[in-house]
Image (tube, rainbow, N blue to C red; front, side, top):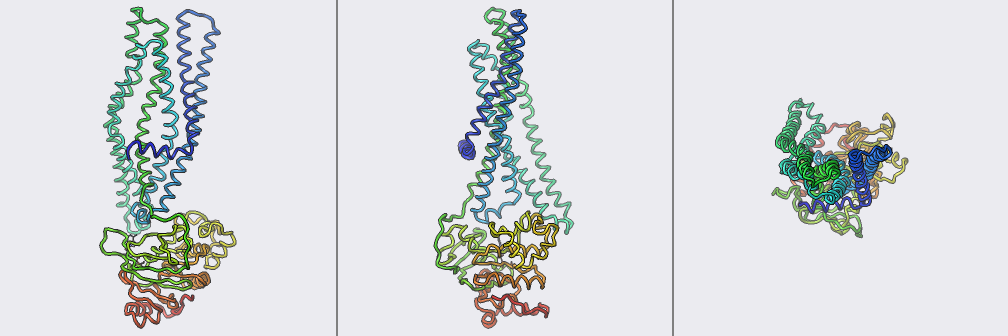
Length: 588
Ligand SMILES: Nc1ncnc2c1ncn2[C@@H]1O[C@H](COP(=O)(O)OP(=O)(O)OP(=O)(O)O)[C@@H](O)[C@H]1O
């Protein structure tokens, strides 16, 4: 992104709070202007002293002006900062909402290709680091440039030669500053890259802590983190070393305004060309001009930082979206058809995960998808839910290509319980309520009762209000799964997809949940990915998937007759099962 695009994007983000930003600029200008009053007042006092005036009331008045100037400066600066911080916080909120909204529209692959640490880095850390920059840059840079320029005009009116002399250190200091700022954006991007790496490794470390400890990998894994921390520190120190000299020079040269004013002013005064009052006024006011100009120049660092951050935000916001219409479409019924569907997670991989799949899922029927591990069973369900888009062929729902309907319409038809059973770090009640945000407490509890999780929930420390911990970490695998099923029940969508949804359940709870599922799916379409074949022998249709292709479809009995792979799976399955409970199947 070039600079003008970045500026355009930034202004776009700020537009909703334009008035507040303008107000903060005006207040900041008043603050800097007030800060100039003491310099004028001290110049006046010096002149009166030179003139030998002894009237104390005059001095008292100008001392009051000094005090007033300082007080107003602080008041206006604080007001300006408060207004600009408020506007900035809301601007950042909007940027974050836009990113999160965007993530719901990009293909799953885009999200999975990047680490969660890198998303956190951009959405939380990078956007947060815009706050001090944006809140101070907008009012302070403007005011710090505007007021000294007015003062300079005044100095030029007093004596143009002295006014020019008061600016002599600016270009020299600026030259040194440019040495420091050279390649700033590039270096700052390098720093961000390293911070992102640190974020990624620490998130990875925390997420994988169980595996790391179980395999006694702590030292190795810590090394990955410590390497990234060291790399970050080395980079920052290297950057500092390269720029230290330029920074010290510019910081020394810039404020030394009297270096030219004093000798040249002295000569001009001696030659009778310059009056003492003008000489004194220029000396004092020049001190007041350089400070704000320096402050404004130093914001150029912040502008460069902002450019890099906005670039990162915009690259997220411009990620390719799944193209979906925004207007709901009418569908005939809820029949799902796969028509010659092929699919690859990665376009560059030659062998597709699904090849030429043709399938029909009819309303009010139960379909079980079975097959060896890695054959593509879950992938079929993920295509139905719209997480991914087919590579070729099409999937229709009620006769309409699912790509021709808004994602929200598609997901409103489907309740999906995945293998992950992700629970959010909120109460159990809120986790279940995510199935339907408008559900009452009674409805939440009813759903929990139906899938056999009410009893263990009421025994938790705070019952339904117990916070289940990040990713549901405080519940057992089976408990998490039942809560996830309750959430799907509450959604009450006409198509229910269970991806190995009963894998974690013990026989007693499995029986409870299967009864509940049977109640829930009555009159609905159930699509179930199943490993344990005995649970799905009653299904209306079994789909045998093998290596991304449909090997056969039919009822349990039909498949035993015609599909050797299914027969083999069934024999292996019943051979491996304990005798008790072998006949428990999911009725529909
Ligand atoms: N997000 C992904 N990115 C790339 N490849 C993937 C992804 N998810 C699954 N795969 C691959 O696609 C293939 C099919 O996976 P899928 O999960 O659909 O199989 P499955 O039959 O459900 O397996 P299982 O029974 O073990 O859960 C596998 O080779 C898997 O490695």
